[in-house]
Amino acid sequence: MSKNIQKICWSVTLFLILNPVISIAALVLYLVFSNQYTGSEVLWISVFGLVFGFLTNLSITMGYHRLFSHRSFEAHPILQNILLFISAGAFQGSALKWSSDHRIHHRYEDTDRDPYSINRGFWHAHMGWMMKDETVSLPIVARDLEKNKWVMNQHNYYGYWSIGVGYILPTIVGALLGNAFLGLVIAGGLRIFLTQQSTFLVNSLSHTLGKTPYSTQKTAKDSIIVAILTHGEGYHNFHHQFQIDYRNGIRWYHWDPTKWSIQLAALLGLAKKLKTVQFSEILRARLQTETEKFYQSKFYEEKLQPVYERIVQSQIRFEQLKKEYQVASREKMDQIKAEMQLAQIEFQANMKMWKVLIRTAQRSNYLA
Ligand SMILES: [Zn+2]
Ligand SMILES: [Zn+2]
Image 1 (cartoon, protein in one colour):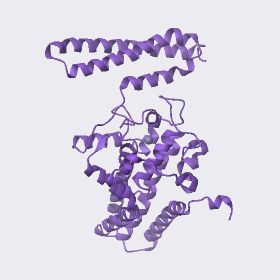
Image 2: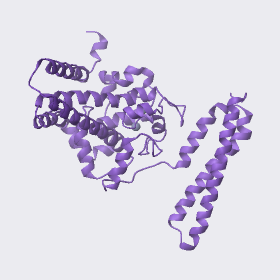
Image 3: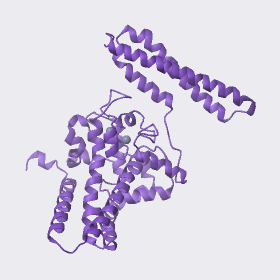
Image 4: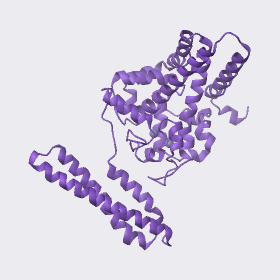
């Protein structure tokens, strides 16, 4: 046996290949040769598969990723268990193992120690890493999660959870909708395949396609296309720079269903302590990245640097005043409000200057 074959993790590799191949082949053969089904059964089971697929994706992005890997918010045990239950049916390993691997990915991004480093190629980052013993069998390092009894329950009984939620549950729902077999292949196998691919894109396409507004030192990218394909995880440049933030798309209109779901959970009392990075910090990273190409020029030092300082300082001032306002006495409120307005005007005026200077620099010879 060659050395490369010995290094393959066969259990994961066979599952990743056989699940979609068997599901798609069985579905096509059944639809073509069987007369045991009706059009409405196919329709309703597909609708259920889509909803279940949406929830499966969400349980990974909201649960495995933003809650367990990054602890970007706190979840009520009810929500934790719902997320752990649904995500088991995604066949992406237990929350404990997934989160441990993901934290290693962040800590050692783009280096040899990053299990799904994009520098080892698109295929490796997408799925290849799970097929190799060396990268898929990294030891678990997540002390906090090992103390969480719900997470450990899912981890210790993962085999039962995954088969139960991944295949048996959709078969039962399929039977209730009139066709157990279609439930198994559409809402079971096919849904697992599609939701896995959505998650895998975060490791491959999110490190390949898009812009780098917050850091050019990392391969992680921001892309609306990837955000749509991955439940909002496509703002990956931001995420790698500010992993503690529960949002990936920071503007309210950024396509990030995971962020909206966390906000909804908070409204329902199932989530609390949603962590966000101060806007002044985000602004600092964005403006610094924007000016990187001007670092070598005198233009940056003389013109852009002071404007940059004023923008960041006026934003910091605004944030401080906002905190003061929340605990201020009645008499002080008006005064603080006026100061906040002044800070905002200063911020906006300097942002305008910034845009003019950047445009001028791009047109002239100031590019380094
Ligand atoms: Zn992450
Ligand atoms: Zn990443």
